[in-house]
Image 1 (cartoon, rainbow, N blue to C red):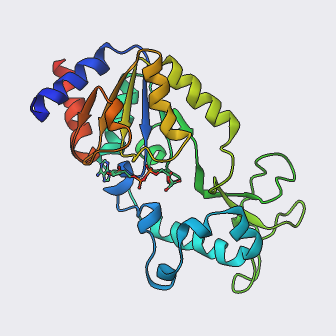
Image 2 (cartoon, helix red, strand yellow; image 1 turned 90 degrees about the vertical axis):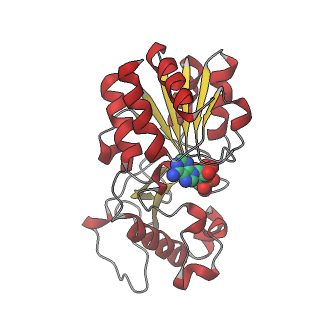
Length: 255
Ligand code: APR
């Protein structure tokens, strides 16, 4: 089957769907120039292993190093703009108002593109919170209202004085339960799940397409390479999200 035929098939499945859910990973932001977690390191950070920096243990033993790592990643991400993949998903939500996006990404490019129904499994890198959740989990902290010795210190929670940390899920941490429950419910009600730009290697995010399959839903994958989810995909559209998604949207008009 040619890619054009596959795109038409995907558009027909989406058109006929009652409850469409989209699962996105780092691949959807790749064409925006957002470095993925593993290729974000250069210069000073090249000698560090990100997997060892994004953990509660690393933050406990060296809060300043972990804080600087996230400030570095925020600087890398800030110029990024939504790419045609984010824009196509925002347009899809305008056409299918019940559409929900479950994202593993911590950038805010889906919001910038105009998507509004977003379930965030791994948090948001532009947000910060009290590391002790002193006012509840999470206790958001707006560091722009704080002053601290940026050379030597990490900002402290204005309520309790504990260190402030990025509001992202670190390796070994639980996902926000409300978001996880919402993602599982959406996946269990979906009749079509569009999986875009994820290797499918990180649980429990990668379980969502399996949940949809178990309830008889169809899984459509968009990824230039095979992933751990390709074996359960009813359709694998091999290509870049920024190229394929606008073509699926265009095919919807003909479906
Ligand atoms: N369009 C679509 N997919 C792409 C593109 C593109 N232009 N470029 C790359 N990809 C695919 C890759 O083939 C890969 O399968 O995106 C996927 C990215 O995989 P990962 O880097 O593992 O990202 P992700 O699946 O989101 O990782 C899950 O692991 O790094 C941690 O917590 C972090 O949320 C992240 C989680």
